[in-house]
Image 1 (cartoon, rainbow, N blue to C red):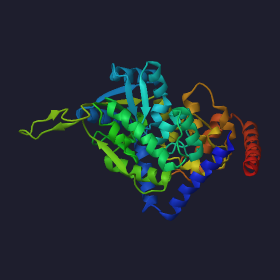
Image 2 (cartoon, rainbow, N blue to C red):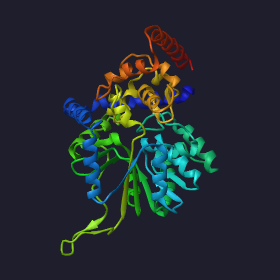
Image 3 (cartoon, one colour):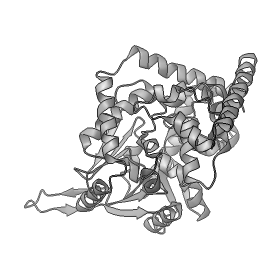
Image 4 (cartoon, one colour):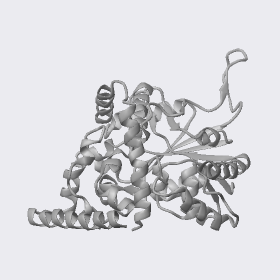
Length: 396
């Protein structure tokens, strides 16, 4: 593990904690309670999912149900057709199916349009937070990596780094005809896609001729109001802010009824939108004892407060599956238990700081061990390793 990266990560996390402390979210407890009620209602509710699908289709969206990664990749390739350049926004579900690399295998150039994800892409790095993927990288290290990749000297001034990546991304966006995004929520009442962002890149990506949304069946919410409530919670926990810069609510393709009140589709862009709803064992998890893990909204507040993650960073992770919750969920979708679950301290800080109070420690204990002696061993092992790594971090 790289302790310089961990130090940078801790610095970034402390900044978020400070903003959370100085700018408390109004009626936060009330908002969390509403969010939990929405998640309890929606997760595993097949009737509500079908209602959302019908509403989406009624609004002019093409909806594809993907059973697994293979189905999702095949659906995306079919929708892309002969296009060889794709612009894409940050999406944990597309990371789950390794979409970028899978498309590249078919000769398709995929450009991440989020500043952090683009830096990860060109430097071939792993993410450290669901909403702040390069929180573990200092500006100096980023500049060194970019200078090496682009074969030119790039300043380590953060503003200059952002400007350089932004300008490069803009060139690709102007050329692309297909944009791929995730979705923070799909609403059953309105049949709407809700996406939030701060950079404005998603706004540009969805204005291509074709917009492809790849998201999970666990992203269903009762209504737009419930989705907006979720966005306030996720934004505060992820960044310490009260609301993102942009919230896109897409309730249909481009259309007009200006002439004789008759609807005509495809006036501007996007001319068509395809929604790919990924299962990938979510249905199985929803029916079992680990259903609560899918309540997660990926705010990353558990990581910000996790003692182990603040000591070893994304060593306590596996690609997009970050920290205890991520590794537990990955273990349920993979063929075997991820060995890094042994590093969980069972301290409960994740549950304490989760807006949904997801009992991750209990889930981890059930997944990683079959008996009390084995669990005692993991408990002792994790604490010894944590003390060792914490001492190395302090003395680095």
